[in-house]
View 1 (cartoon, rainbow, N blue to C red):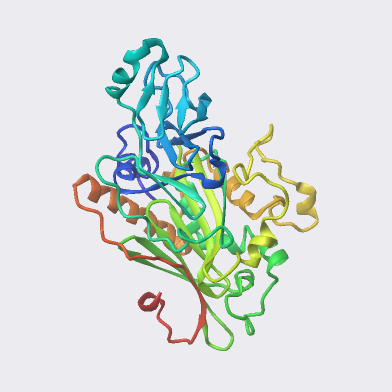
View 2 (view 1 turned 120 degrees about the vertical axis):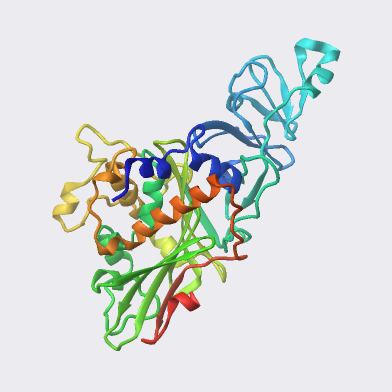
Amino acid sequence: MITEEQNRLLTHVEGDAPLGQMMRQRYWIPCARSAALVPDGAPQHVRLLGSDYVAFRATDGRIGFFDEACPHRGASLVLAQNKDCALRCLYHAWKIDVSGTVVDIPSEGERGEAIGARIKVNKYPTFEGGGMLWVFLGDGPPPPRPPLPFLDLDESRVWVSRSISPSNWFQGVEGTIDSVHVGTMHQSWIAQHFGKASADKPGEGSIGLTLNTHPRYEVQDTPYGMKAAAIRTLADGKQYVRVTSYVMPFVSLVPASGSDRTGTIFIAVPRDNTHHILFWGFWNEDGPRMESEKQMTVGTRDPDNWVTFDEGPNRTWGQDREAMARGHFTGFTRCLVDEDLVLQASQGVIQDRTKENLVSSDVGIARLRRRMLDEIAAFQRGEPAADVPDTVRPLDTVQPADYVWRELA
């Protein structure tokens, strides 16, 4: 159990909240799918840490990222024209080029260019990687790019979707560290797509084992965040080890397919105190995307609005009770991720963690909270961020009984 003040530190990001300030100053923040930004296409509204921004792709392919409000009188630049490598505000036709310079003020005639040169437009550094646009909202030079294995992969090897969730960002992150729920809440999806693996003949990376073997849970702090392991002893004495790598503050790399070069991407980014963006997808460094992606991303869903929420009059979010009667565990039959986001939303927009009753299998959740509280405290003390490796990966492997994942993961 944590205190009310600790819960506030872990969840509040708006204004002067220490967590929001740390995120601005120390991290690149994923904010949009790259494919949603089309040259001369519609500007995209982006809300991060309680503030509103506009992202757009210019005629020549460059990215512009500004405060949403026009610097003239605050009209939304999401409504602006996007052409000639600039946004033109609809209210008074001020033109702001992709570099963040006001280059035309029609009402001022010849004086417009000189006036525009003196006006500050808040423009933010960005880069594109892993199918996403990343932005740095802090002061000074940006930090190194996050140590993720999929940032430089081409589109055939990485796929990512975007959803808006009506719950606090930390509920999303905790869901990715909580290995216990995988074999319970997701049991119908796992059985459908992966089968119920045999504990005496599991095969490398057999996620089906999560349905019928009880693991022990171990965690390890790292300079970049944390590793959370679920370890199962097989009938032949070997260990089936699944290690999720958590890269502070947003990213979890969940293992799959018996390799550390493929996996599932979960990134929970705070829009504000009560909503977060979930980026969810798959990558494979050695070839086309994983077969599991083909299995679980069926249908014609909008990748920029993958999971939609309507809790309905009974707060059941479209749950199918008839499907449950036929044997589906949750009644959310469209997509595995629906189960995650609906159950997180059901905890309330900001979960009251002071009322929980944690047990031994919640060791990953408890350590995650302590790791983040320690990082926030270090930031408040002015300590520099730790150095991190070039690349972080998850782990999914069957190994001999004496295998030590902490030393080798």
